[in-house]
Amino acid sequence: MGEELKVIVFALGQEEYGIEVDKVRTIERMSPITRVPKTAAFIKGVINLRGVVVPVIDLRGRFGLDETEPTENSRIIVVAVDELEVGFIVDSANDVIDIDSDTIESPPEIVGGIKAKYLRGIAKLSEGRLLIMLNLSEVLNKSEIIQLEQLEV
Image (cartoon, rainbow, N blue to C red):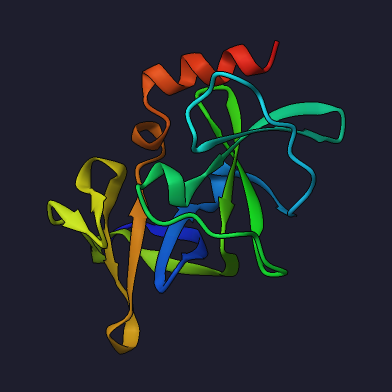
């Protein structure tokens, strides 16, 4: 048995994704986002979260999926990576589950159109359910982190 991981499960379209709970600061309902000029299209802008300015990324846009209008179920998952807090817009945040790290396999080259570099792996859950585990440091690769840090000034 590997180590037990507590994971937040969220959805983008029909696919389910996971982020380790210890990387998640908070999950918020959609709130007004202030657009910042001269940023990549998937960087939607910034929000004021209890007095802290947090950059917000649309994960659909980041992964090259069709972007959609936010719904009642849309959420902003605020994660912390290397002292940087970033919000991810997702279609819904569904669950918190425990998974065994041994159930996570290396990702194939492309999953649902998303490049493998963004993925930590695929967790095989019960009933044939698959959970795509994100590699947060790659989702926020260095060039974007520099761009996002400039937003916080």
